[in-house]
Image 1 (tube, rainbow, N blue to C red):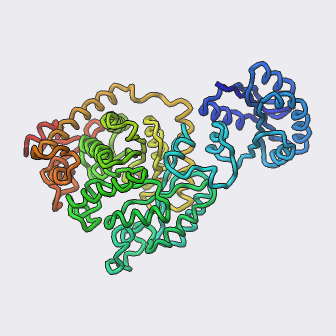
Image 2 (cartoon, rainbow, N blue to C red):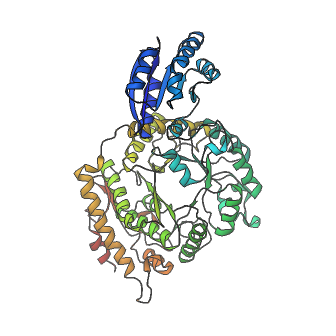
Image 3 (cartoon, rainbow, N blue to C red):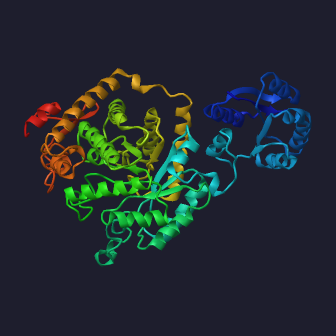
Length: 541
């Protein structure tokens, strides 16, 4: 383990920046030695010698003229150590940092404009080159590895006009606070991009930015080429899936594909495909991206939760998602874990549900199928009151950090009132960064709570029963029923997969009743009492 010693030089007593730097150094695997405030040149060099330091960090945040003289003396006294291979860095206010740069002694000078990500990258041995695309990896996997142990930050963004969205993307990228811009496009762009005759001018901008040509996508991507050069991605659309995928890859370099299994079709009114046909098309799309080594996320389980389906069906949907992604050649799979869905779940039961998902899909992983954890706050869970919504965002992300996510999909605190602007997103991501830093510093292990463990085991047991019921729908000639579109569609039409909000749906039954019981979303009978999955299924199978 390499060693870093650091402190505030001379008469400077400001050490908050030093301590933050050392905290990041520990995350990067360094052994750290904090020397404290107002440390003399002799003390710093003596400690560097005794501790066999590989890196020495000094800070000074007072008068630039005084700092320049002090740093000059320090550089002269420390030069023998530098000649022996010890590295030196400086951190201070911009005026002092400017003088430190001119000395030409320090390997890296931090003036407060560098992000936490950039500082961590330096400590992991990667150079910081301001505002250059090659500083920031441009694939999802590389960026996760570059930023580890911090998660990537993702947010949805798309305003009703191209101009406003372009300006917003540039503002977000310039803030260097977001790793992934999820481009929110309007319904006509998702469903009718290749069919102008089906587009409706009165719906333009409904739900996102109205992109009508490949050039529009290129402009949006071009706006992100500044700041920390965030990745860009968008949803898979509701029709013409592979032609759309080709446009996305050629224009915005789609960081990963997000596709459902059962949705974005006639069942939810968001596309022209019937259920079994859309499942087959989604599987083809997974295969298309898998052949190109592009990661795939199935934004599937939360669609059930948002319609008040019981926790067990959300867990089953999550397993089916990972199973199908693997079956159709996806190599890097993003497990979408939406908390607070449906609203009203307790933290313990919410965490238990997510741990059940991860434990069930873990056996699917291997060298050819890597699972990346992505968490988010439930869109329907935010209160309208903004102070309360800010508190909810922070509390939700703190709980999500228990899963050690690779990606956090931040949902801005304003979403219950309006689509997030660039300023809203920057504020939400600032809150997320603060919570993430606090969590990584030493969060308790919530998984040890006996209530969490008991509920997790219960959900796994119940989900296995449901999956067995789905498999039993298939004739003997079908070798892999859990990836067969006809069998999967039948799981919906028979009522094995169901949700209360699907009542009067042309495919689903909508006959299931659920209620939040002791913090968990459970199936209940006519009297409101929870029932087991085996008993529920026995009523109609």
